[in-house]
Length: 272
Length: 272
Image 1 (tube, rainbow over the protein chains, first blue to last red):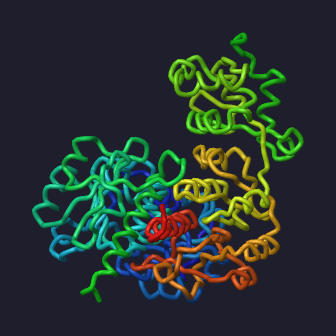
Image 2: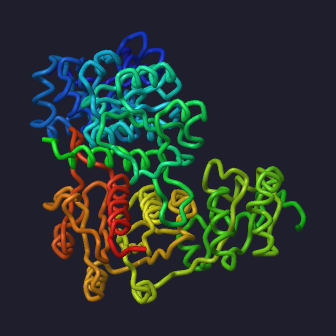
């Protein structure tokens, strides 16, 4: 353990804080993970990518066995810092005493497709960081093989997205900056059915066959998918509304869809 | 249409704004609905409860047919106001030009139970307004008969809860301030099975029989249900996690559970 960091105006603090900017993340190839849940998953699932961990004395004591120990095995750079230093580094109002700087990696679509994925999620035009992160978390929970994100969506390594994935960003490949039309084409070429989830859908979710390899496609939280993209998908599927609600929000709809896929996969006669 | 309201410091504006406080809502029996979606649903589903509607000239023009027309049929008090007046009245940063003051009603549990409900949702110790509102929206979408909220939860008529229900607050009865233990007991007395949704559950959701009358019970977003309450329920049910995610958030888990109930209900051989 190095000396306690006490100066919230140091160059190091400014450098970490500047990773909240997309341009700085692009240039350095690094981003920040805030809070114990995210740091724990980074250390567990991507230890070779952990560059620095910053933690207050309280957090070092509280998370000694489940985060700090594994973090020290992953990197020599586990730094104790004051509450003021941590607050100055973090984007979140309450990072709960611990953050990490990690190396970004950009998994590519070729690698994902070569692994013969059964369940994928493709997001396009998603603008709210919390929504994007929550859908990644839902995809992870449902056992999806990867999440694909179009170039038109919010940046996956922005602090709010990273926070709302609750560590799922380190659990499955998240392929980014994809050209949406070409990606739909490539999925089709690989025999992966594309299912647009949209309130305009003609097929009701409970009636859709979800046993084969497929990719859910979700659009913008306010206006859904552009018509041209809906038409480019194999099916346009609507989650039924049984009461008077006008719609579900993106995260809710996505959660229902990916869980329906997970259930169908597990109900297959020849599944594990 | 009365005179345009232009003074953001008037007594009327202060009175509306003060409804953001729970004490003022309790004393006056009124609360505020912000934004076109909520106001539209209030006017459609509870026209006799609409006291005042405040809208900017832009909103009056944009929502002329779907909100302002029905609002004028519901109340003589549809007021045009300036952007400044609307901003001063609203809690939201962007109420999109329209808010309404509505009479609160407190549906009671007796009435809900007398209607022989098939699907209920009971929330306890939910502290985040966005979560509470989103679960009410999910319950509505899944066709639940009512939502029950314990005395330990955030106030249902607070501006953030009302916003995040997206109008669902006017679609189904939301019974409030319930004593949690006594309510579980009453549900049992009425032959309604209580299913606690909790990460500690021993029964996996896909294995649970959801065809009979039942009530989902959800607890705090961070720590779930206290053990005593879990034990007081008929079953403790866990949503399966197929990937590496540690958990789902409350809104996601609740959405999956109520939709599983809706699907089971519709799959019953003797259902409509």
